[in-house]
Image (cartoon, rainbow, N blue to C red; front, top):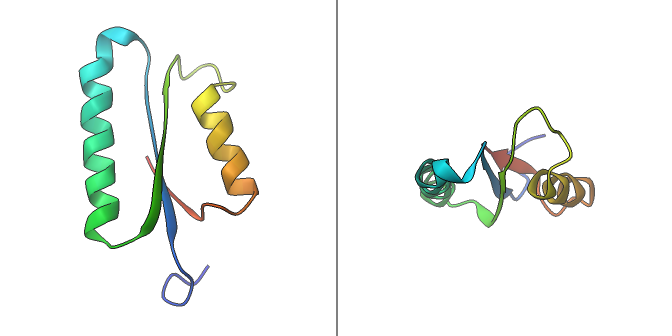
Length: 78
């Protein structure tokens, strides 16, 4: 993919293992969104999960995969 000629439609994905880590999730989200905004990339939907990384069937991750497959997103910031 040539990022210089193609419009970047970025998304953010953040995850923590349990609710006790909510502050970490908030920090991840803030840093990732800022990263996208500083670069002037469009889009920036945020997908998040509070679930174990051992489980690949997570609602936020599944929604992200669906949007990537549908080409609504072409860059993901973790």
